Image 1 (cartoon, helix red, strand yellow):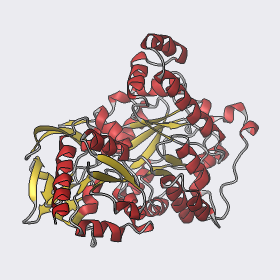
Image 2 (cartoon, helix red, strand yellow):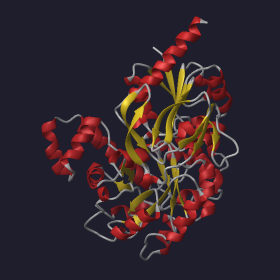
Image 3 (cartoon, chains in turn purple, yellow):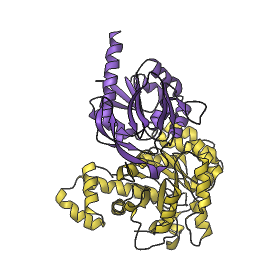
Image 4 (cartoon, helix red, strand yellow):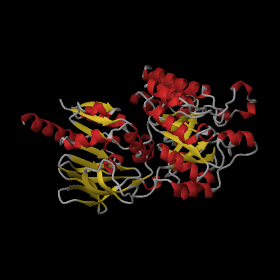
Length: 197
Length: 293
């Protein structure tokens, strides 16, 4: 069984843990950098990206997160998590972890009253997927190795680049675990590959 | 595309979990709060302890303050409307405020009816002292709850009472036979369907934050330990001697609420917390938690 960490500094941690367990993997809440080592994959949940970033810096998570990415281990960012993974954030000169080759714009659908639910087709995951967007970001530009998985009204809202998976919406807020399943599959394949070497 | 659904409104509060929401009265304070790691700010004209001191009728803040704060930070901005004041709530919604607190800190506009919050696109947070009150607010459409505590006192005792009460009543409900729930609904004055949902989930269907009296990092950690999903700090931060430091310490204590060495470390040399008021010294009409039902 693969071990999947959920970054537990702030946000929808409990929901991701539930979805990971329902997808047949073991879930661990990560509160300190050294806890990352044992993990085969990492989910960065939805929450407030500015708050998570402050706490990442405060507890010196950044080197360990970058190391985790450098080891080729899969990382999945939802909403705020996508912002943290992106190499470019519109309006900011520096990214956060900055590992996934996408440009993301924060709060790009508007304020809370503009938050919405919509059904999405996600390539290779679901023809119809209930997606919950909350003060959501979207991917303005995707690098050449990025596979666009889903769009909403022409905007990219889910994408994968090798080991990295990111989406604008919150799969953890519904009972539909297909996207989490997809990530667990990514982690299982990555682990199988690394143990072969 | 559907806006204002329960999932979108409740989901917004889920994203605030494990975080601290801070009262601010201007852009400068909002920036200090954001910089300290607040997950949201509550834009007000006066913090609760000043409302207490000023007396008279407390109303929704001047929209200029909300506008100023919304322009200053990228985190969500909340604001307070009076209990039952339909128009104040609609004004805040029209302005694009991210969350409305139907709050007993302000003077109630309606002593009989709370807002029908399900009618709005914007989500609401409401205070509760027990499960009956929590379930009534959920029944009206609140997407987030908080303890009422006793705002502006810097005294945690009432928030503790309210958090313990709600959680004990949830635990009791979960062990009940379905046949017993209608009677429990009658006794609590709570909507039957909401109680059934709580029993099925084994917890409240919305997050429940601590509010009303949080004055120190240890208070915030205490409330997390008692089962709060996050913390509102009203007067505690900007009435302390060193707001920026205090704000950071409360954020950290909320994240690592069981790490006592860390909390000891970040409680050092914080300067004075707000002075605080003993609850029994409050006149009955000064008790904000008794507003609303």
